[in-house]
Length: 263
Length: 258
Image (cartoon, rainbow over all chains, first blue to last red):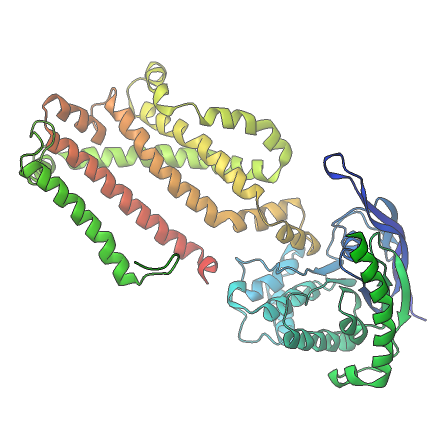
């Protein structure tokens, strides 16, 4: 059994009510432990607090109760040990692809020569050779997100957090991006926390799928995915995959219906 | 006529732009040369050009132009040096904003031209007084506009920087400033245009050189041709500085257009 890297202990989040309204309970007290090298996908209907949970792990939001600790140290704010890829395109538009990937290394004070070397290796890994000197505006959405993944990984974080990173991409691109990300994970065995509302994506990528309920969110099911690696896109049509998909579709459907009643 | 928002080609744009200048001068020429307007009040274009030529060749008007340009740039650069860092700090740190924003908003409405009599008392009628008029007229505007721009920086870019290991200083220096640099340049371009009005007002009162001084001198002589020439020179200088500023922005911030 591998060691625990991330502990989420009774974390909840209540947003204060706007203009004297009722406070909004986004996240019920939630506990989760993440083992080193795990690829965990958090699956839930929109508005279920899954992004809130991820933002709390990133240190971009504070829990109302409970605490998160990474490698035994409590998380107080954002830091380079937790790389994040956002759903919106967050490359720095004034920096080239190479400079975007080098951003975190520069902040850390890594010497230029070493920086170049690391950037070149990640350019290669995400297949962006020839685009080093392009500005984000000149890239497609898929390329921007590949750069964002490279930018987060170049920092060598202890855990990689992804908040529906492929949500804005078309189906074909999304499917290629899943394979790219999974390929990197299979080679480098990073610990990954991946938020999505796409069932197929959640199964294909994960070693463990966490299903969340509709708002206020809490963990409804924790389902290990034992499909063998390396995974190929053809796996999405296998019987084992279909069984999991049927199971998760049922779980999510109930929550989506509940969510649509509430909103 | 095109449909709404439909672009026109570069050639058409230039031709249309020039044709309105031509139309304007033609209307002016018809009104004056045709005898519809008294010569005492409005010179015709030809007299204006003659007067302008005389000003430039005989009366050393080039020196006046130089003096005025120097004053505008001097006051404006002083204002920018003070205002841009202050604006960035106000935009970045809400406590500084809470401290300064009410005062700056108030000071922004103080008319720079109303300070001229006071500034003459304080600083005499020398160069410092002219520079101060422009400084007062520009500095609060720049502070406020820069603060708003910096305050509106995309939050997700700031968050991304934090997750990449930036500290607060790093976020200000390597996200807030570069993200808003083009907009700050644009603000400076705009305020430079306003600085031109302040300098002329400053030169109309208590000055012995500059374009504004020439205009007020010409009034005493009813030399409307000279006055109009002076005004047009200001317009042309404004146009040129605008052009240079835009070119500079394009060269400095290629990522915006990429």
